[in-house]
Length: 233
Image 1: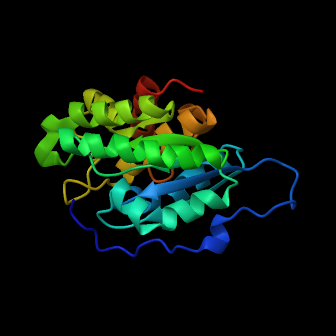
Image 2: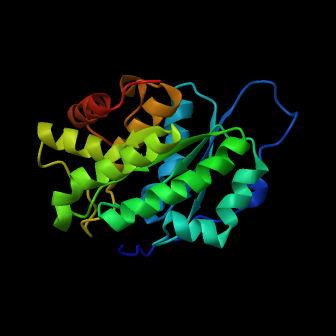
């Protein structure tokens, strides 16, 4: 996986642990565990902002490191510590495209390991399906298969952002969903991923989500693409 020269999100565990007994309303707390495909354009912060704009009380936290797989996160330990603190509603897992058979094997194996910890902490596992690089567009089906299988293995939620990208391109093949490096998402690609995540985790209809900085026609296209691939909860 290519590296992005962007600041890595700080691992502030004081912010990762939900406070207890302070508010009586229910906050949906989402922990994202992944790599640069998660922290590019700060996807978790966008999900939180868009959710709050749609009237949902959501708090997102992130543990993401460049080029990390789920195996790397398991061995490094910070993700496990965060999960075990508890208080999460969903834990979103992401690694590289994982289209190759050996990559799928590892994705599924470590998803199962993390899921056991996530369930023990009272949360639900969600799999953030990404996409291959532009140069390997033939791998889209493999990416979809790997993440779908990993989610099915543990009864987790599938967040099919990569499938949504393809659905959007069926409507307009010129949409700039990749950034200049041909692998990481552009802001538009990240926005579409956020729509998918909001619909699947919170049941927020894409039609109710604001589209800051995106023209009306493109925003509507992206919302329809998200709906194509994400049945609500």
